[in-house]
Length: 111
Length: 160
Image (cartoon, rainbow over all chains, first blue to last red; front, top):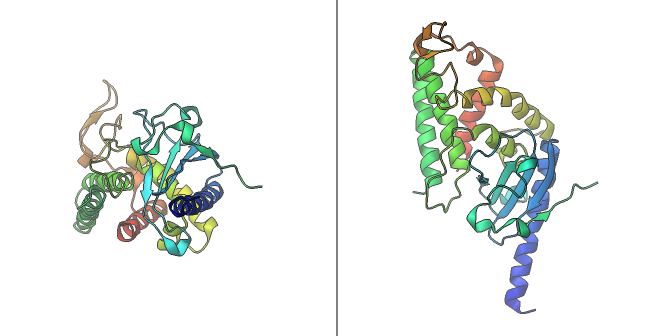
């Protein structure tokens, strides 16, 4: 592994840590969330959460809510979080820079 | 200025006007109209990444989902002054039905009472002007309404 690759890997690992932290917090905050998907990126935490109680997207696209970094809360990277209905999974269009559903990594609930 | 900052700035200004209308005791429909606009712009700021080169897609219905997305944010919880995770979750949950009603005040979503345009529920019912309607669901003396306004005021301070 080159030094550059190592930096990228470390950055992604840190983003994944934050993604898992947020996923855990969000599951605790909203028991209606059934599944959470992480879209790996070195730039920000990107999560799509399935929740049957949210309104349908309407235009067939995902509209994440974006939050600034908050290092003192263990979240040094910015983040984008979208809530969609379970039946919209893999059917609604992701933001352009998020890639496609094939990139999604499911974050399982911790026992 | 970024699109996100611009929507936040406009939401803060709308909220200032809402507060002034309240102090001036103008007809409640006008205060509600501004409140609906505040929530819409606040939600639009949240769905706009800092580096966005275009405004967010048009939608009146983003506020409730935005509140739900905030529930799991430790940073927002701290900034709004909630020490307890459970307390914050309960507070937001208790406000969602009212937030949904406010969201639906937008004329494009309302099938009746709304703060902007006269309506008629059916052909046999009277035409109603917003200035003469009580909007009892949004009574400022109700604790849920007061709590929602406090949270909105606070969000407009802490969000950047």
